[in-house]
Image (tube, rainbow, N blue to C red; front, side, top):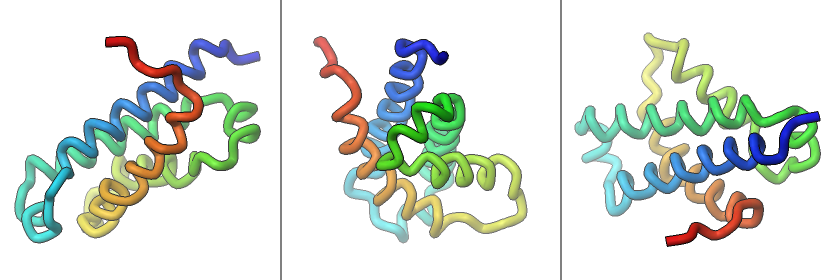
Amino acid sequence: MPHPERELSYLWDMQNAAKELGDIMRGAKFAIFEQDKMMRYAAERLLLIIGEAANHVSPQFRHKHPEIPWEVFIKFRNILAHEYGESLINRVWLAATERAPALITILDGYLPEEQE
């Protein structure tokens, strides 16, 4: 049986990376994103983190919470990590500007509010 705190830790990693991605992408236009290697590489790295954390969440938890698009992020992480020759700019843009913000909203329901 997976440890609940470990599951929460992976969810937090996913949410934190998605929020950082939102900070990086805030106000960005595709034309700038396409030209800015640092922005693209940062977005790719944060999407890798989301996918890696999602992959470590137990199958039991993932099955119990199908509203989180686990496989989307896990598969995208694998593509980013292994498909070196493929141009992924459009897919990274969509994941960073649409999928990640939606993920934050979903995960808000599972994680306690941050203490400041």
